[in-house]
Length: 252
Image 1 (cartoon, rainbow, N blue to C red):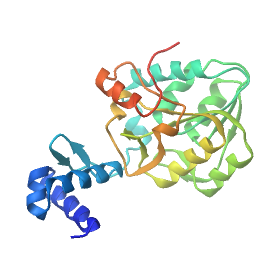
Image 2 (image 1 turned 45 degrees about the vertical axis):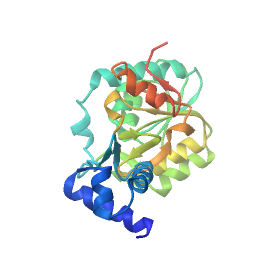
Image 3 (image 1 turned 180 degrees about the vertical axis):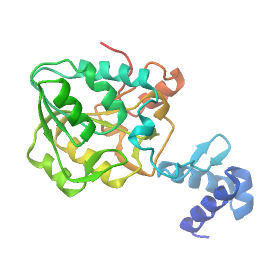
């Protein structure tokens, strides 16, 4: 049996059983347990299953991304905590990209620097900055997606070709191992475009977003300057993700 056939069979088995041990999968496919362990590792690295001690588990994906109004009241304390850390990384007179998402929206009131230029593809962030600050602001435009109330697509991505960003902040639906994920490939494209032209690249993720994955990986944690989270993350998870990059959860 070819490797790609084994991988397909493993994923089919997990669809039916949710969790299976290495020995059960090996017996089902009539191959060695060592082969199955390698297969599980490869499938885990490409975000197709969850590798657990002694076996593998199906990834529990949401049927659809939650709309902004559904996320707006979730984990507010953690999001505000993250905003204070974001502020500590920003300096006066900088060009700052803030992406879409309720984590960043709740963080905005805690950004207290002077003479900033804000770049965003988020309609909600744009409206907040206009109403509550005197910062200069640029909205990317592009194709509007009402679920997350942001602009995506080629036009939005082209905005960043001529802009020099000092620090860029993007949110995520989940971080699993080295993978920073999102539900929509085009949403991830805007964040990649902003990061490409940013001197510092930062992802914000409250503590519930770790060991969670969504459909698309838009960036690797190891390629970021920082990942900001809150103080409710457990020590074991914090240490594990520190192996991939610089994880911040203390205000300074």
